[in-house]
Image (cartoon, rainbow over all chains, first blue to last red; front, side, top):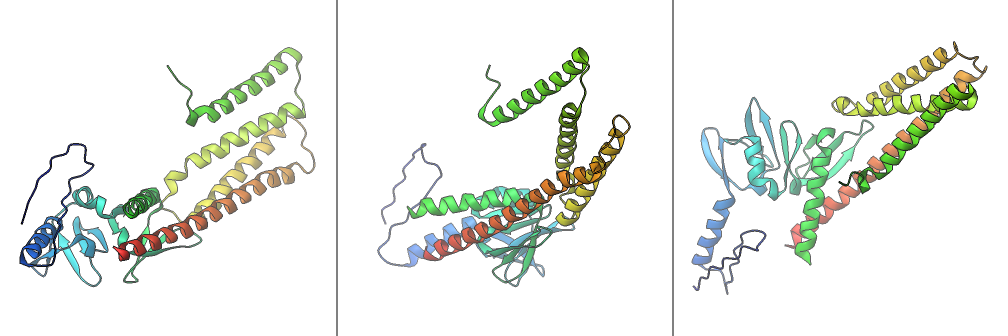
Length: 154
Length: 143
């Protein structure tokens, strides 16, 4: 396998493109390696598990502990909310209340009521409430993702 | 040093216009001793605008309360202030027999229009957000 490193200070972000003819063990190792860079660890029943951030629907701080909610599983993370947002904010995670972060890619739709409470319906039909204080935060992140998606498509 | 930008241009015009109008009222009262309906109406509008802006400026304090309750309580506080102001102004000059009703309508109708516009804009925004969410999901699926 030919490997080349190109240093370019003008790049917006570091990137690695893997060009391959067909799947093989080497490509699988590389794929696992890059996945591990993005993964986080969570605890459930005293077992430590590796989680992919994309599989998390939302996170909530309960009794000063951060919990990650997947479709049906809940894991405790050893991160603070701020640290998690710093690391994964660019991956679609946005704060929607004092103690909740949601994965925008897991939001199916938004509903509102007479009190203008915005309810986020997730892909697993679970509902969480978007605090009005964080509405701008949520909308900014959503429109930013829309722009990025649009640019990637061009 | 540039002090007037695009974002504060209109508010600067409003401040200068208000100061000029209030200055004119005071000057007319001092120089000519003039104080009639025209001056009173302008002063009432200034007081009402100040009251409305003050109440709206406190909106951020009520983010945790249900919006409908906030709208109703804000309305009650404002209409109470308007009626109090009308009552006090009755000590200085005679009120028209429909004065209270006119003040009630003058305040309630714009407030109701403001609430309707706010609700409509929120529902419009929710529809737009849902379209964006759908679009993002479709593009993610294509990847």
